Picture 1 (cartoon, each protein chain N blue to C red):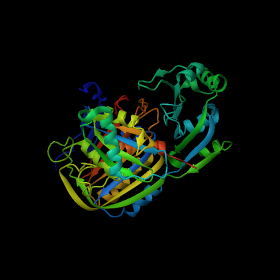
Picture 2: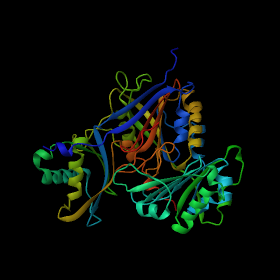
Picture 3: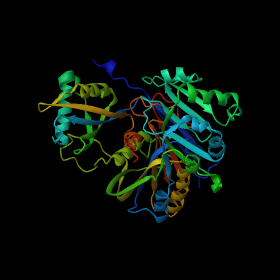
Picture 4: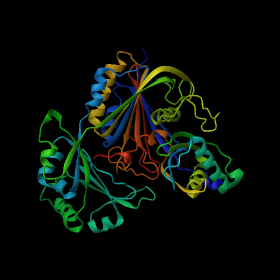
Amino acid sequence: MFSHLEKTPRTLLVCERSHLDHEDARLGRHVEQHSFNHQLSLLVPGCDRLPAELDAALKGMRSFLLVRDLPLARLLEEDFIDQAVHKGSTYGLSYRTRIDEDNCYALLPNGKLVLSVDKDTYEVLGLEGETIAVPAQASRAIRVDLKDKTMSPGGRGHQRVLKALTEHTPLSCDLLLSQHLPGGEGPALQSLLSNHKLSEHRPRVSSRVMTSLPCPTLATSDLQGERRSCDPQSFLEWLGAVDAGVSFEEDRSGGYLSTYQCPQPQTLVDAAVRCGVSGLLLPEDIYSLVDVLRRSVLEPKLAPWLALTVHGFQDSPVSWGTAEHGFLSGGENFYTLVLFQNLDYWICMATGSHDACPP
Amino acid sequence: MQPAIFERVVVKNSPVYQYMKVSLVLEHVQTKLTAVELKHLITTGLKSLYGEVGAAFPFDLLTFEEDTLTAVLRVYSRGLVRLWSSLTLLGFFQQQRCAFRVLQVSPYLLSLTGNSRDLTLD
């Protein structure tokens, strides 16, 4: 009777498994390409406290800047391009802009500036762009490669973009900025943008300990959950339930409120630590965290496995690399990394139903 | 020891469940309600819009915060449109006006726990 109301868009979930030291392992590439990370959630079953090294690594994630009312033309000035774009990796994302309602801007570490603008702004700017494939999001994506030869200050491309951003329609936004400088070279972003209103923020860390937690049983070789593990979607649902604080105790309403249960097969662990960090988190810090997890949890065999979920910004115009991303109704943009004691890993990557497939 | 292998699987399918993060706004802000009352309110709305047969699909109230009246619902994908539309059209709770705000809908519960739109920096 309601068959026309029962269809929903299909989902894409890419799952990979390998070993941390395997030559074909692409974990590093996946983490590196996921530029704009808002939150990470770490779950370590079988522990009631985190090792000191891991705790310090989570609390020591680098701070980020919030620059208020920054004209986008500032990102095209010679000193910014020389010192922030060409040296190191600079990440920038517009703050509190909704990609399905407002214009959103992103500066990728490879020097690409992505402007996701509405139709009117696109026509006034006069720059070349592409239509975004997400329905109910009437916007265009303009991509400017600040490292390209034509974008060197004084070049034809540079003049054109600068004129669009200063004369046609001066665009500005509150911008979240962070930078990774190998070897600690070069000036900090604070000195480059000192004549703008900026504030420095540290990522927020929270943690809690759970007791008597039913955990799904995972077997490293059974990625698809056909024999000894639960399937990836049930596992991700369980992780979401733990993060959301769903109670696994017996429902006092007799099953009226919820029938959700931990997927089978399962084991009961006495304690588990769940830690969250939120802010603008760089892929370099996340990849370093994987090394710390290896040294401090997996090699001493403190837990049979652990799960690290990294959420991207829902309003980021890109997901992995320069792949298009939109919000639609959920803005899914995350990956979950499961690390095992024998250093095997699973990585499950998800984006929205109309976004580009994860790598 | 067996050599490690590289395996890649792309799971491309219609999801079994959809998850909704919703918030209830009441005319009298000080009104409190329990999780059971909220579920009953939503079930009543479903039945009034789609009838007994149309509303005959289960949904779960996974979490409920009494302070903010925010809840996370789990529903079979085939029932999402009916549930969402009945939430949109629900207008009264115990003779006071109310409205449901649908904050986020996703096939992944994990996506509802990492909402960057809640990021607030002073």
